[in-house]
Length: 83
Image (cartoon, rainbow, N blue to C red; front, side, top):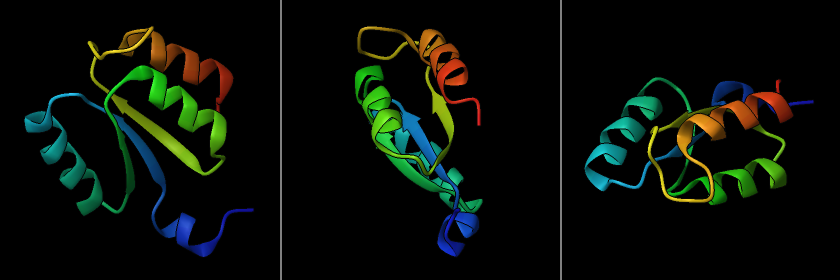
């Protein structure tokens, strides 16, 4: 069961390695009521999804460092954690 804090601020993972892109996207998400966990590669994003059960969404660049790109990351997350 989600806490009231989680319902107020759903957790989003933002995967972006460019600070000039990451900062405005993070601010935009926060301004619209999301808690944001920022990582700069697909490997770190997958580790977060495996570790945390409160993540409710993913925002990723198409071309991010890591073993898989943003497209593959999104497909894998959708498959493994459909909720």
